Amino acid sequence: MNAQAEEVSSVVDIVKLALSLVFVVVGISAFYYFSDLQLLYRVLVLVAVFTAAVAVAFNTAKGRGLWGFMLESKQEFKRIVWPTKDEAVRTTLMVFLMVFIVGLILWLLDMFLFWGVQILMSQGIK
Image (cartoon, one colour):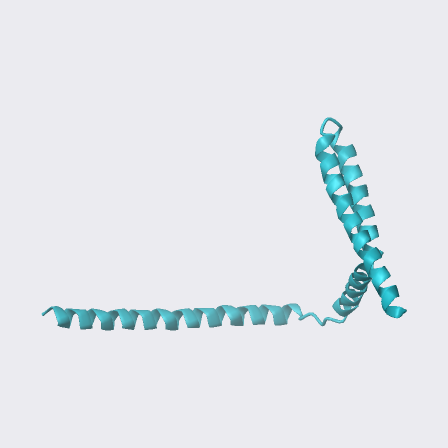
């Protein structure tokens, strides 16, 4: 009995998601079809249609799951401990310093390898 209820719910959810997709397609089509109307009215209708599509999509199991995920993400975002300005500046300077040092090492390695290849090539020509 429970499997049958989940199947019916799943079918209803699929129909709701398809309906929200139809809303979006019809809204975009109407936006371009009624190009002789003022842009403000077309944009307002498009926003209303998109809002209806989102409302229908959020009334599905996946939509409610997505809404729950967004609420949990918002709560997690509040728990983040951001670095102070001094920590951020020090970390940024450390990154710049390390990039400079690695770049210098790679440049020296490239220069010595190029120098070695030139020596080997000049010995083979003689």
